[in-house]
Image (tube, rainbow, N blue to C red):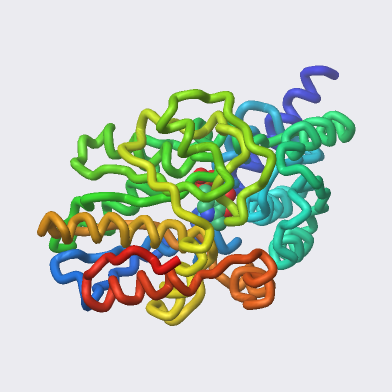
Length: 364
Ligand SMILES: Cc1ncc(COP(=O)(O)O)c(C=O)c1O
């Protein structure tokens, strides 16, 4: 009887892996957009557009890796209720994979998660649970998984190890492959925010593993402890307030954040992130999300430093998700005013910089 059960379990596992492989086989890679800037001759910007995944964000990659990791470890099997702590994007992608595998899915998220993300999770059949304090999502997720007899995916712990950082067309390998025929194929810098820290860990490890000269800059938000962890070395830091930039910035140093693979960090004020998001939206002709704004602000700051040193080359960052998810918030003037965020000085700073290459202090 026990043998029969083990055999059924194994059949389910093999079938689940095959379903995910077939999904990969139906997918295509995301585009690397080239963007030249009139005020920055000799410097070329590239944007890896992760918003084009079927579930709209870079988290599609992570969700797939987390499910494969948990399935192959025997943590998820037929009928397992899957639970995740998320600021929303990961849960959207995980709800998609849970549906693909016929598994119940539960997302535990902060109260302020955008209504568009909640709708997307529900669209794939997921259930949403909310907590007031962003630090509560971990305990609440673990508790819910125990109550349901299910599995807590725990992206914040497992993101860095569930991803194949040496290759297998991970995001870093894809970037370097797509850069191969550009005038400066090895980027000076790759700029990326950290939520779990999984993407920056993959990129930083891959750069070192393949001995590229590229450096990795991680940009951090106002309400987040990653920057202080990087500069001070202490991992026990916490703050009470959640990040305003959904997907990045955390109230604790997440286990998947690996500071040893990061060459530099830049702390970006929230108003600067959202100004950069608006400026980039005009330049691209379509709207990115807030964490892409943080990336873009860091990219411009690095470009300003390169210009001051009279050096050129390529800079790469990610479009993490699209702005449609933030119509009621980041793209809503009333919401910005209610948050007391004045993005105009940073928008002027960036617009001027991109037009003539002069990096002035924002007139705050
Ligand atoms: C929109 C968005 N941008 C960036 C990130 C950061 O990615 P990572 O978790 O790999 O650090 C996330 C993570 O949730 C996200 O949702």
